[in-house]
Amino acid sequence: MENSKKLRTWLDDMGLEHPLVIAGPCSAETEEQVLKVAHELKDTDVSYYRAGIWKPRTRPGNFEGVGAIGLKWLQKVKEETGLKTATEVANRAHVQLALEHDVDLLWIGARSTVSPFIVQEIADALEGTDKVVLIKNPVNPDLPLWLGAVERLHTANIEKLGVIHRGFSTYEKTKYRNIPEWQLAIELQSRFPDLPLINDPSHITGKRDMIFDVSQTALDLNFDGLMIETHTDPDNAWSDAAQQVTPSRLVQIMEDLKIRKETDVELDYNTKMSTLRAQIDVIDNQLIETLGKRMKVSDTIGALKKERNVAVLQTNRWNAILGNMILEGESKGLSEEFVLRMFKAIHQESINHQEKIIKG
Ligand code: PEP
Ligand code: MN
Image (cartoon, rainbow, N blue to C red; front, side, top):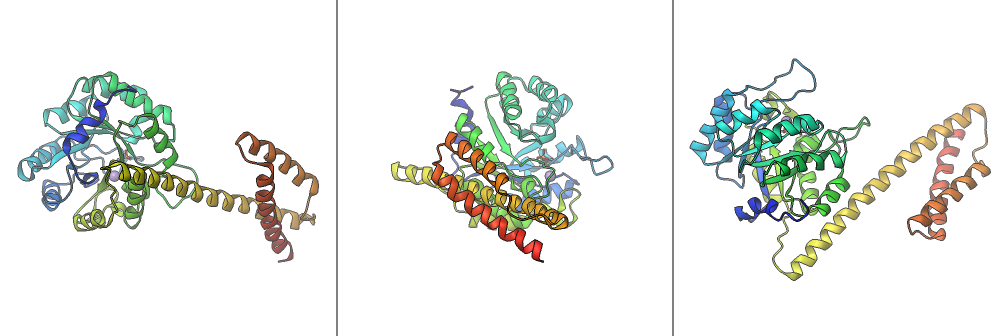
């Protein structure tokens, strides 16, 4: 797969002057809704019209999709608007029905990518197709699992491949619905530079007012496109209501996004530089987040010390931490002086916190 330049061709052949945009409702609900949204997206930057026909729901009893009838509505979308169509497939039967109804782009959802059995079944059913196939990351942040799915499809002679970063589920409470692991997507991109990389800010954020920011980060990190859930009446959508945007909001988002184009050497340098800077920004944010977490644990220790009437400063413990960190730092190319200075600052902040707690 390493040398397969062909992976990019389908996207390059489209000759777009902007990132690829896939948009449309989370779910096809009624024929009227499907056509209404499509007509509003017709004269925009949208290339593929998405609508979930079969919906994988975490808990039973929620709306599970309209099923095969929705494929007829997608055919009508294509006839009436010229938009190409896209839907999620999760088993052999879905693939057969989607191909029979000439869906142009099929994607594998996060809950399917986790299962090599399902991915293989889909790959076998799609063998040799010339449709575009995109693979969402698995629910859990496991790069080999994601890559394994790509390899299964590639081995099934599907050449128009790409991946979608839709974030990862975590036990921790975060501001995201599914936390973006940008590092992981960046790693995948550097290993397979020819694999188009699409971002799905809708499922990452779960909230429509965060979609712009995540989209901008994705473009800064050189993603090739965006998949954004779009509905004419988002609040009353039958699934994922909080994260869908209206067609006019989508157009506004596309207008406001800063899009970089690679055309010459100078621009190539700028592109590389802004990708690297965006990576640094992501890491810096992680550093602050990690330091915040450390301070919370330290506060809990402070409360415990107060309860037990123990002194804030425990010299032995502190020396042991420092010794370990200096060794760890060395193995990462960080000087002893730097590690010492950094940990002294962190330690001082911890002591300040704990003293406040003990006095308070
Ligand atoms: C979707 O795109 O509507 C969907 C169900 O996505 P995911 O597989 O990312 O949860
Ligand atoms: Mn959805």
